[in-house]
Picture: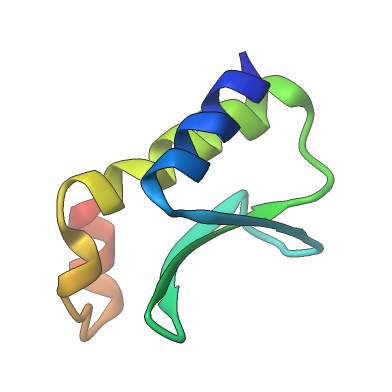
Length: 77
């Protein structure tokens, strides 16, 4: 499942980076490119679910919104 998800991300023009982080993942726009950051310590199932979760922000157009506070972010989650 993970390779298929990663292929779809690439087709959509979303870069995936695996890094050490406390959270499971994060979606953002860096240098005008959509990027998903994934906790490198997740197993394949959690990695797949996290990528799909973060990809939803891109597909829902969240990349155009600026989240001004933590309360707003919690509502989006």
